[in-house]
Every structure is written in C-alpha cells, then in structure tokens.
Image 1 (tube, rainbow, N blue to C red):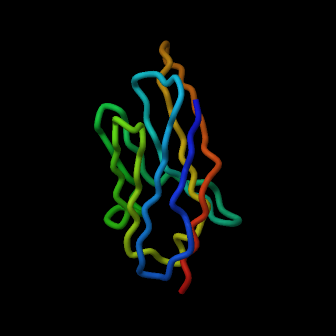
Image 2 (image 1 turned 120 degrees about the vertical axis):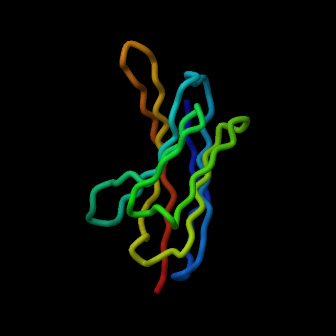
Length: 119
C-alpha cells in the first residue's frame, strides 16, 4: 500500500490551494484517509478525514476554510484550502487508516507536501 500527496506550494495569504492524496495498492475495503499537518516546532495535528463509507469531518481549527472530498474510483482524497493564513504554513501529511479486523488497524503515511503561506 502506498500513499502519495501532492499539491503543496507557496501561496500568498488569502489564497487557496488544493492538496491531493492518492492511495494505491491492495487496500482493505473500509478505510479512512486523513490529512495532518505539522508546523516547525509543533506537534502533528489532524486537519480532516474522509472514510470509504462517505463520512467526512474536519478539525475546528480549519472548519469553514478547508473542505475535504473523496473520489472513490481514484482512491483519492482532496483537501481544498481557502483563505490561507501564514499560520497554515506546515508540512501536510496524508495517512491511510485501514480496518483490518478484530479491532486492529493498519496505518500508512505519505511523504508529505509542504505548504507555505506568505504574508
């Protein structure tokens, strides 16, 4: 199983970006793709997630500005980020969480994509 993020870059404050996270390989049918971010010197925090059953949620810190969507056919989750702020500058990571049965899960991280918001 492999997870690959793309779409990061440099943007001015107030701008928008769309991040993509594609999962590939032999995956379990029920899974969740989650976006995390980690700013320098800070802990990694959850931004938003989308499950294979169609449900989605986002953290309060990004709710209203970040929108997550999923293309089931492509096993890809997108996170559209609006009204970006310098505080959103971070490395953004995607993680695939698979339910493998008996209460266990398998987590696979992507390599991350950098988002830099200039003031």
